[in-house]
Image (tube, rainbow, N blue to C red; front, side, top):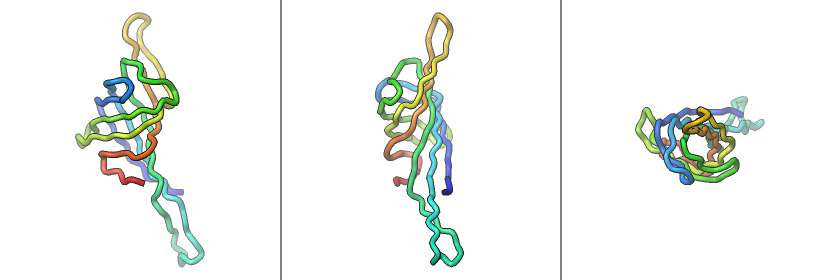
Length: 122
């Protein structure tokens, strides 16, 4: 199986459950399974069919627990295009001083269509 990947990043955005987010990173991958047959004349054949993504974002407000389904929207930093997708939260890390604001870093997997950055629908 072959993979094609593209990475996107944004500085601000939002999550349906928790409001504003920052430092968004998204890696989109298209899996292209090998479908070479004996009739291919010795050439490999692939189909592009499975598109998915994963990434991380930071927030100062808790916005869900592991396994939570929510939506994400952000403006990609280079192109200025808005990206959106449904996501499933995979893990949550916290950091911060003993007293003061706590920063939450969430990892996620996209689920369903990713829109806005010219990524084809599967």
